[in-house]
Image (cartoon, rainbow, N blue to C red; front, side, top):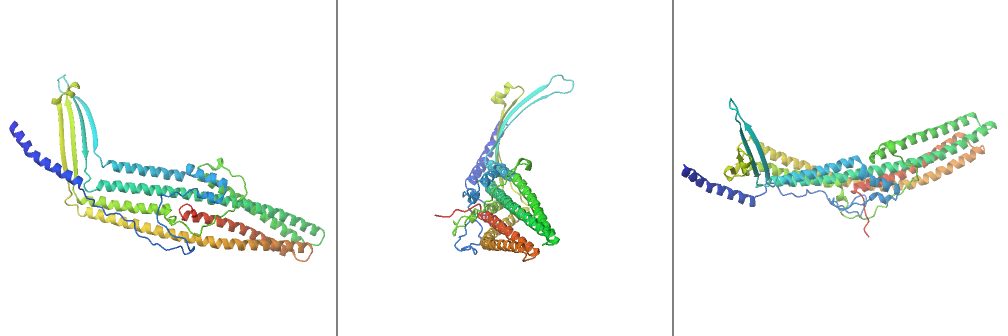
Length: 474
């Protein structure tokens, strides 16, 4: 019987060796079943339509964008924008998502290596009328490994790596969005401060006019309707001042939330408004548009979808698994060290699905369709980015022209208001003409402030559309 056991083992040994050699050759010369990745093609215009001389670029999300908000020259904004990256909760969530994606990369890469397990146990048994009991102890160490013959596991790891890169781009987008929103809210608040200062001066002027009108009415040279009109106009200006105060409070609360603080814990004192608008350079480095984080994220998600095709295609090929174990067992703990109680095993297994009603083909088709969806989203993101830059360039040019015209209109309206008030004092015009001139002058002043604020907001939007700022070449 010993001979029979020896003969059987000898007959199986060559087969086992051949299978092991086959596995080694397959591992060494394994072939990837997924398609090679290529960045999808996108439109590449020679220059921007709304700013001749600007050159388009391609995604390069690893370039440093720098503190773009410093271009506006406001120390208070510099301080707040730096705090956003630390305290904003949306940014914190994006940071955690990126850490989660990095952990997923580590998990996928771990599948490329063998896993080793250590198991131990103790058992005591007995039964019937027998008072004696038996003890059994065992200790076993085992290892298993799935050779990545068809690059299925590597495709999963590559996909996780691309997903982590997309998550990093999402983090950059979250930072840029939060910082841009903060800048818009901050300048809106400062614009509101300027509007409040304008209304304070307007209320004081209306109060003086009301006093003049009351004196003229007391002297019998003005009608009571003039006094009522002056009172109505003064009350209207005060009402607008109250509304602006409410708007300022809401903006202050919004800034507090962006900084990760409760509104009750944050306040911004009234300060002069810096209506600075950075000059857009005539030529931009060719990489700026490609630094947009949303473009980078969309491109990396195409890479993720491409790797999923390889994972799906691997189902057409057999899966292999190598296992080995060594253990000892005995009725006493001391006996575990005896070689006679040792047990070992080596194993090789292979599996292949012969029929699954087209499920594998359906998964491959689904993965290919998923890649097509990602490609379409990527191309649409690029097109939207070009349109975004064009829109902001057109708006910047138009708003600059409007600001100059608003300035001329405000100067003319001020002169008309002064002339009408002087002529009213001389009794040359009715008070209704004074009211009309004052309303026109106030509207022109407020429109000028709004035009200046719109230019700042558009500059922020242009910076965001360029991926976080620009730097003119020497």
